[in-house]
Image (cartoon, rainbow, N blue to C red; front, side):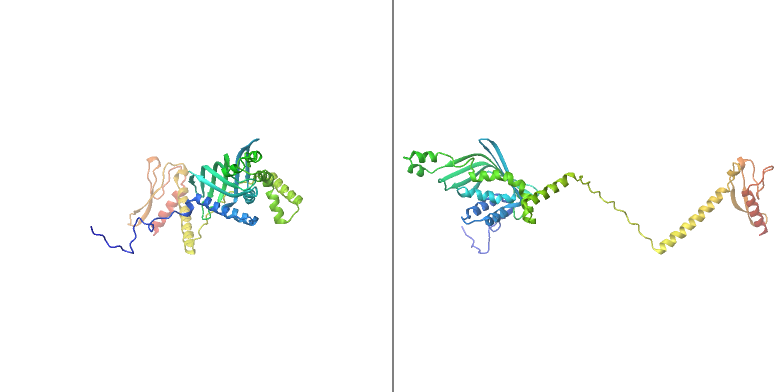
Length: 355
């Protein structure tokens, strides 16, 4: 069995050189992986600027974050805008959390024209608590994400529906305080509500008031007005929008066709042609006026040039009133005055004889 020598420049078609790498935009879950890494790189010195940069990297400017869960007093649903998202993530760590990451299992992706939707029915938000005691909390639910289909691939909508949660305490801690009933009683109590700390819940309740006030805050920051003046201007503008009639849909302007201007030669030709047509029409109308029907005779003149007795051409008119007679040189009926047409025929015949 002979073996061919190995060519250092040969690359197998099944090797990695010919494999097509998956484009970046078709991996929305990788963005969650990057977000987890960025959250793990957070330090205790991370300020508001760090959280603003975090939200700018992973969320769109008009992004919304929605949390749905059920507490003892009924179901809750909180929706916050882009300006409040950085503060939401910071409150998670202010409540005693030292680590936060998300795990997506069996997610479904759907591609649209300008967005990608990720629907994960088995999503887990894992938080590691260092106080009041060392506890690991697993919050399970359904996460629906909508990414913009571009190079940045940032989150446009975030909707997390919490179904259940579990708080896990290490066995080593239980063994250390096995003889202390007070510590065991404290360890048996939950430190979160539906996987969320009290800091986060209080902030979400506060967002119910802060979210409608975003317009006032932005106006105060932009124009440096007092809170009362900001409120007055916002209310006045809303009142104007309510009172103002609805704008009619803009009508599309009708495009008028421009007439082409003819050249001087074409203009002169057309004018000459119009003059000839008008002259011909006048002659036709004159000939029509000379018809014998206007005189009450049921005959029409039939003009033709025929050779005369002396060999000259003369004009003869054959008048056939109801097929009864024929006359030359405009002879008239007895008792009936000659018509203008007959007179013209006689004159024409006389002129022809003199010639």
